[in-house]
Length: 409
Image (tube, rainbow, N blue to C red):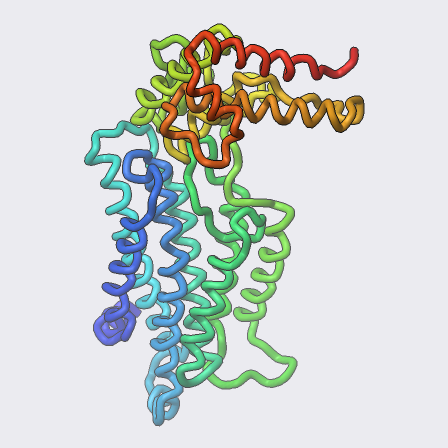
C-alpha cells in the first residue's frame, strides 16, 4: 500500500493543483480585512475560512484524479493486477487528501505566523478552527473523489466544485447547517459537539468514496462500506440543525485584561493589542458625557460582562475604533423603555429624536466634529457650532427628554 501511495503521489494530477490552492488561499487571506494579523483566534479562523475556496478546488482536483479510472483499457488492466481491487482507489484518495490537507496547513501556518511575528502572546493556538478547516478539506476531497467515480468527463470536477462551494459559501453564515465560520472573535470558541458532527459527516463521505464499487452497482444493492457511509452522512446532516452553529460563546473571565485608565476598559486577553486604543476611546466618551450623563466605571468587551442579564451588551473591536466608540456611547445612553405600549406615538417620537440627537452629539464630541456624517439631524450640526456651555445645556435637555420616558412602576 505504501508503494502504491508513493507512486500515486508522483503521478497524481492533484500535485499540480496544490500550488494553486496555496496561492488562492494566501491571496484571499491577505486581501481580507479585520484583526487577523494581530489576534490569534482571528488568524486561526481566517485560515479556516479559506476552505470556502480551497475545499471546492480540492474537490475538483480529486474528481479529475479519480476520473482516470474511466480511461480506455484501465478497467481491463487493473482487473489482472494481483492486488486488492480497492487498493488503487484508496491510494488515489490518500494522495488527493495529502495534497489538499498540506495546502491548507501551509496557509494556516502562514496565518498563525502573523500574530506570532508581532509578538502577540497566546496561551492557545485555537486548534479548533484548524481542525474544522481540516474536516472541510477532507469532506471536499472525498466528495470530489466520489463524484469522479460516479461521472465521466468534465462534468465530474465541475459538479464536485459547485456542490462543495454551495455547501460552504452559499448557506447563510449564521445557519446551524453552515460547515464553516467567517470570524474568530475571542468571545467565541468552537463547540466540540458541532465539530464532532461535522467530522462525522466528512467521515461518512470518506467511507462512501473509499468503498464505492468500481463497477456500476446493481439496482437495490450496494456494498456495506458505501451503505454505511451514506447512512452516516444522512444522520450527520440531519443532526446539524439540532446541534447548532460551530461556534458557542465562552464563559466570562474572572480576571479579564483591563486598562489602568478611568473609566476602566476590559477586553479579552487575545485582544490586548487593541487595549490602548479602546482605553483612549473610553476616556473620550467619558469626557464627552461629562456633566450630561453618568458614565459606568468600567466598559467591557462583548461577552465579558459578569452579569449576562445586564442591559449593556459591551463593545466590539471588530468594526474599528469608531464602532467601538459608538458601542460605548450606547452603554452611556439611557436604554429605551420596554413598555412601549404605555406611551403615545408622540412620546415615543420625542424619545427617538432626543436619543438620536444625543447619540450623534456624544459621538461627535468623542471622535471630533469631522466624523459627523450627512445623515445626522440638523439640530446636531447647529449645536456643534455653539460654545461648550450652550452645547452642554442642550445635551442635558435631550437627556432629560429621554429620562422622562419611563415605564410605570
